[in-house]
Structures are given as structure tokens and as C-alpha cells.
Length: 328
Image (cartoon, rainbow, N blue to C red; front, side):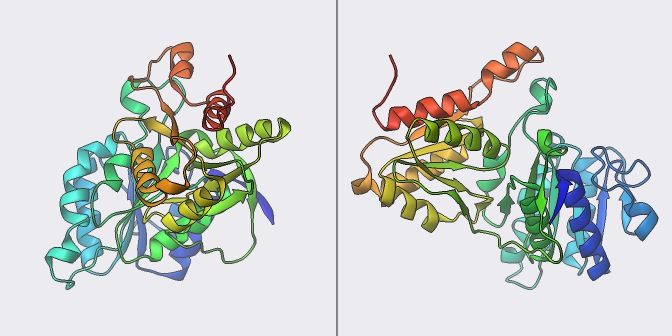
């Protein structure tokens, strides 16, 4: 295995898929001559040329629409959003066109397109650039939503997303691009819709995705040192959601804690909590606990930003609450 940073793993995925299939191309702001705002596309322009690595104006709605049209006629675009906060401007194209064209054409048209870019807090980027927006896209039928945690997952899930015949929302946690991890050599394809059980335990089910993986990992280690053993699930894909893995774990541990970077109201965690209570109610020995970002806009001030975010201390406290071991 090689140890790669997140951005390097994504770059490998793009390179391999563009070499494999001439219909794959990359489009977005600063992806070509600047090598990408986060250097994910470094070297791709030199390797594949300006017809397949395309710089765009600052017009998310415009180049999202171009990508959708290209997908409908047989190409496989990868559309980079400099941040998912900016992709709000392209919501109409993504949810009213990409997500619906296959159904509205009676299956005559497909839209194999990946929209990818940084999601969530970036570190003192303030309210308009620090939002975790997965719940927005998971709400709409027709979109698949992927939120990897490790470099290996980033590579394997991006390759699978590019090969998928449906539009995929690919969420890359902004603070993870420099994080390193082991990535298997050779072809790496990970299935969409399949969660991964990262740690086994009988006391409580811990569920996370994206950047929260690292907070959950630290919390699980702290809990284990205190004799509390969690079943820790890394979801990897939010839609389709691996309900089977979640319910199997909850029926074993009888408790659940869900960790997400985004806000609590109408969050992905609320949907998961509903699935648990509606399908495993009789197995629960305690209410489902949710650890989320606070319901406020992110501040530019570092101390206020940190106060609003999820951290391992809050996760440990939530697990203990689920176990009725709250500390006074």
C-alpha cells in the first residue's frame, strides 16, 4: 500500500478513469492551468489537454448545465465545485435537471455525471463558506450522495461514482485534503450504498461519515480506554443508505449515537434516527442521541467557530448519555 494524501488519492482516481474512458472529462473553476484550487487536478491538463480538463468562468449554474447536457449525450463529466457553498447557485440545474431527466424521459436519457468539491468547514472561512450541505442533496430523488472519510475511500468511491449511470453528489471534506492514509495498490472500486463497520463492540452503535470519521475514531479510543466498546459504522454513502448495517448493529447494541458536521434541524442524522426508531424501536434501551454542529452560522472568529463544531468530547458525552453513565 502507498500512503497518500486525500488530494493525491482523488487525483489518482481521476487520472485512472480518464485513462480508462475517453468520455470522462473534468470541468470547473481553476481546474486546468491553476491545477485546481486544492490541487486535486494537478498535472491533469498537461496529461489530457484542454479539451478534457476545462477551466470555466465563475458561473456554477452555467457549467453545471453544460455538464448535464454533455452527460445526456453520452459523455461522463466530472464537475468540480470550488466549494459546495457555491453550488447552491446551481441547485436548479442539479435537482431539477440532473436528478429528474432519467425519470421524466421514461429512461430514454441518462445523466452519468459527478459533481464534486469541498464540503463543510474549512477553518475560519466564516458563515458563507463553512456549510455541510449533504442533507440538501440527499432530500431529492434521483441523486446519489457520497461522503468519503479516508483517502482510500475517496479514491475507490470516486472511481465508482464516475462509472455510475446516475448523477452523484461527491462531498469532500475541505479540511481533509492534506490528511494522509494508506491506499491499496492497483484497481480500487468501492460500492456505493455500502457502509463499513470500522470497530466492533457491544455497548453502543456509533455512526459517522466524512470528516466526522476522525472525531468518532478518537472518541471510540477514549471510550475503549474506559471500558466502553462501540460498534462504529462509517457510512461512506448517504444515499442510497445502508440501512441493513445500521439496523443490524443497533439490534446488537440497543443504543445509537449519530455524529454529523451539519446542523441538527432536518439533518441526515434525523433521517437515520427515524429509520432506527421506526424499524428497531423494540431493540432500543435508550433514546437515539445526535451530535451535530450547533444551530448557528459559523463565525470567522476561531474560538466561536470551534465552539460550534463537533468534537470528540461531545461524542464521548453522548455515548455515555445513551448508556445512562452521564457524569455530574
